[in-house]
Amino acid sequence: MTYKETLFFVAKCLTISLDKKNKKEIETQLKTTEIDWDAVVKLSTGHYVFPGLYCNFKRVNFLKYVPEELVNYMEYITNLNRERNEQIIAQAKEINQLLLENNITPIFLKGTGNLLEGLYEDIAERMVGDIDFVFSGKEYPKAIEVLINNGYSNVDKENKTKPNFKHYFRLQKENYIAAVEIHKELLIEKYAKEFNYTIANNDAQTINGIKVMSYKNQLCLSIIAKQINDDGFEFKNIALRNAYDVFLLSHKTIAKEAFSKLNTLKNPLNCFLAICFEVFNKVNSLEYNRTKETEKYVDTFYKYSIDNLKAQSNTKIKTILLFIKKRLEVIKQSFLDKEIRNWLLKRVTSKTWQQEKLIQLGLKKPKPNA
Image 1 (tube, one colour):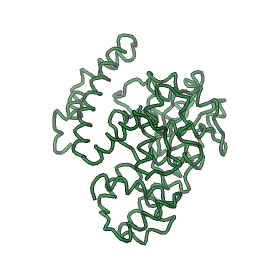
Image 2 (cartoon, rainbow, N blue to C red):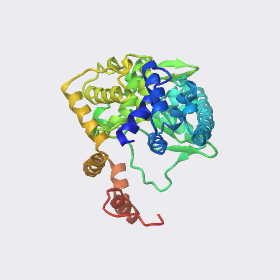
Image 3 (cartoon, one colour):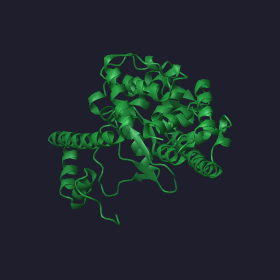
Image 4 (tube, helix red, strand yellow):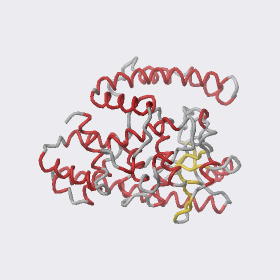
């Protein structure tokens, strides 16, 4: 299987619990085609959807088409992820109670918010990193204070992390499984006025005692996390974990209308929805607004999907250019912000940092034992 064939196969498999057409096509493929399971495992783990793949196969009784050894491995990893998510849910509920007792109401975001609201049929199918929540500008410093006073401390003990416009430094608590990110913004400064706490709070919903964003705003943030915050719009690629969330949310809100009132964000979000529509085999719930921009974007996405070497070359070039652009922005910010200025001086004079950046940019190879 080529990279494109594997990508589209895995994506379609993530829809078989809800889409009859894809379920039928995947079953036919499993029965009649030799699947490169090594490629499937590599891609699905790289996109953090391996447990989601297993859960979908299990729900529609397709595990019988998968090699027994692989089924056992999939079950093992999925059970581990379920246990982790159970701990994350318990930790998030504890934090929610703590903050509410201090008259602070968090809006839970992304994977943790999705788990808490019950978006997934099985909590094991979503791989989650941090616990993310957002607060008003007034509640933000108080939330930081409350968590620090209750045993949370900075993950980055060496002060490597740049002061962040969107959120406070990642915090962790001993014997708790997840780090937390306390947000005051949802986007980089360039787009903060267009999609922020006020917008998220206006139509937020409370589910099971937890405050989360509306489904349309959840769908927007699922795309924003990839397209804007992780520069996906520049790389013209897809993250199946985000795309799977978009697919599930598209059954709770009209996808192409979710960002209709946005301005500069509308095109990047519509482009991501367009490639979701393609990789998930044109499911109706992912219909998008067709424009010249989306047509060009989808065409480039297909070219990179077919020619993985070209995609890797583009990624390397874009990474270098974005690194330079972001460093210049930091230098500019340092003239206006004393905290950033002090951090920058410490970082650029660090030999360790210099070596890390040379390796990151591909200008130096890491040591064999590193």
